[in-house]
Length: 319
Image (tube, rainbow, N blue to C red; front, side):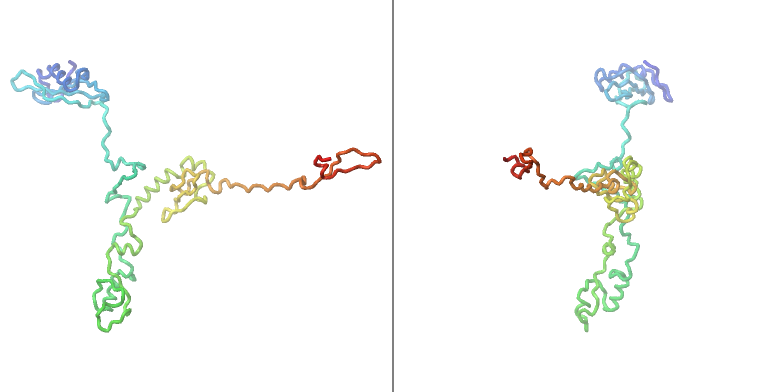
């Protein structure tokens, strides 16, 4: 038996000597040949001792079989309490568990997957908080409703599309302007063009800009070797809003960033003005006039010193 590992008290002698009993219990739990040497003993209490054995299990490097034995007061018989496989000081352990929301990475979302957002997501903020009142000239503002109520003498709670409320003495059709139903925050938000419940916050904009700049920004190898930046490229489609000052969308099908959000400082070899193809040169006029017929003498001089010139048929080889 190897040297015992002590805590604050000395292990019980009979329990510490029950190595064979503990080994038998460990082999029953692990199987024959999967329990190694005895590596230590620890006193867990009065007459309660745990024996440790090396584990020969594949994939469990540094783990140990722990067998706890005990005996009753004034008894000499030692019995097995439990057997369990536990990690040792140098054991290989699984990494700490991380929630799925923190393990998720860009590209993990597939067809049919739903990605819920937290109600307190820092990347989003309310599209309409309700703190700002509608413009005074709005049909939904308190000022307009009060004016209509004073003019009609009645509370405006319904949609009046054809003038004053029907049945009022002396009322004429079209005498009063039409007033829609008083709406809530949602109606006011839709009137001013804010129909989304939440929009990107400043934090959400900054984190998105950091991601886009890291993927297609000025520090990428492609941008470092580019002849010019995207800010002067004709294939750049600018974004709207504040992001327009720094980003756009590439519309060059031959660019590695086609359809991606790119920084204005990004660039590639597909820049619209980097390598403009020159117009093909116009061919020079022919030196030889191929349409003109030249007469060629086929027969030598005849008697009398006359020279016979060939005709068109003889030029073609006809006699």
